[in-house]
Length: 180
Image (cartoon, rainbow, N blue to C red; front, side, top):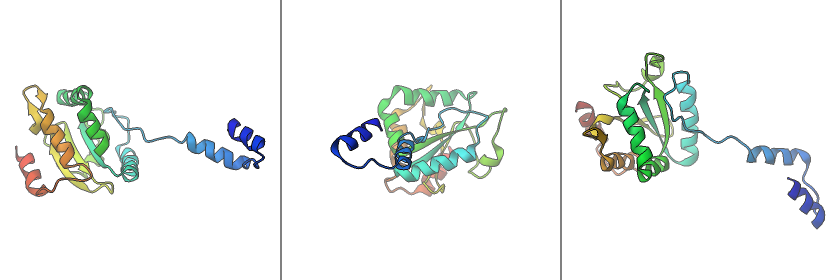
C-alpha cells in the first residue's frame, strides 16, 4: 500500500480512498480454502463440506470425501500413496477438493454419514459434484495390490471421476465395485 501511495503522489494521481485501500488489503489477505487432510473427530463434517463445495464450484472441480480414521491401516496406506506419488497427488488436487471425514469411536459422524451410501469398509470414497450430488461411491479395497494400492488403478479412478469424466456406465461400475 505504501508503494501505491508513493507512486500516486509521485505521478500526480489522486490517492485511492482509505476505505478502498483497506478493502484491497483485506482481499489480498483473504483466507483461502484449506483442505481437510486429517481425520479429526472434533471437526464438523457438514460445515467442512459446505466449504469444500464452494471451493469445488469456484475451481471447477469435484469433491472427494475420504471416510476413515487414524485407526485405519489402509487409510495410512492411501496417505502414503499420495505422499510417494507426486503425479497421482497432482491428479487428485487438479480434479478434486479433498475432504477427510472421521469415522471412529471418538466420533462416528452418524448424522452426516447416514445421508450417504452404506459404507461396507474403510477407507471409503465418495465423489460428489460441486452441488453435493453423489457421482460415485467407491470401495478403496478394489485398488489393493498386496499391502499397497495399485497406482495405475487409483490414477484411473481419479481420472474417470474427475470433473470431465470419461463416459462410463456409472451404475454398473458402482454396483460392481460395491459387490466385490
